[in-house]
Length: 246
Image (tube, rainbow, N blue to C red; front, side, top):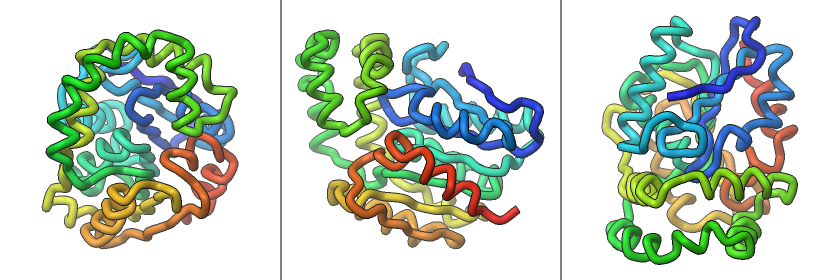
């Protein structure tokens, strides 16, 4: 796994785990705002643009990042944040090693497996994948995701760089992921964020995650859709980070 780093001379570390189909630029603004006081690390999740391995499982990604923290950062780290697929990987990290960080921000993470969606991904996505390289289709998808316009060029470049096999692998993992009982042993202080306009599955998932993690707070984001908090409101996201106690 490859990593992008900012503010390497600081001792307090924040790790950002980007959403599925995105890349490090998911958290670029946050990293640039925080690099003067924190060591910021953004892994390129397996199977994504600029990564060095195909996507296998959420569990494998979690294990690799935990190993990196142990080897290079003498964990636990100050804060780990994850959006969507990145949020699921963070949940898995907290299940495998509940004290891997002091604080955690989980944004828009699905924890309700969907067998129907899971089964439909290979045939449906297999047919639509060639369209993703067409700019008009990518632009239509981009608008549906409500990501701010300034990120379109990077979105288009990096979605085109992901193979069909990797897309299918991480989409199937995303729709099959279920919370582990060991999550109840998590000692990190966790904030669970979800948008008011998110689908029912994400809202239900947030409630489930909140019930399983002892030291957690559930935060609904008024008028926001999936992933908008970290992607479109970096200053508010950083304000939430800066509000954490030492």
